[in-house]
Image (cartoon, rainbow, N blue to C red; front, side, top):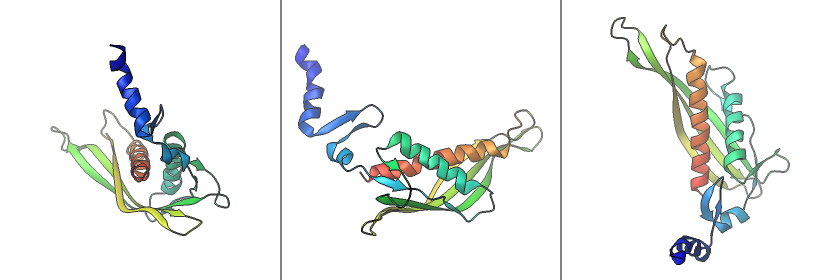
Length: 169
């Protein structure tokens, strides 16, 4: 019976993988190749004020908590993560039966990003049209402000961006 509990550990050791509680299982060489990344404020091509700063802050938090990369200034970083917010849309999701007024809405934020190796100029990862949505309930009962949906969309988009970067590892 003791051998049964050691089988997963033995497989892990023989496969060259390691376990880190904050990141899960991954190949060992990924951790040896950890990098520094500069994240300038994302460009905002929409009319939503402050959205570039809000998304940049959320992405930096995700990078700091979910990757081995160190976020640093451009002069010392090995890579640069640049992004552009290209669109923000509001979508009606449901209406009240009695009133016909919108009872739930979504805010969809769309962006493009590019991760570039600063020593070679090579693009490591890029994506156009990455989107995420956040919902809110503006009706009288809940009375949530648009900011609730916007914040949820930004958090979801930051998570999705970091997920895409991690897939390339």
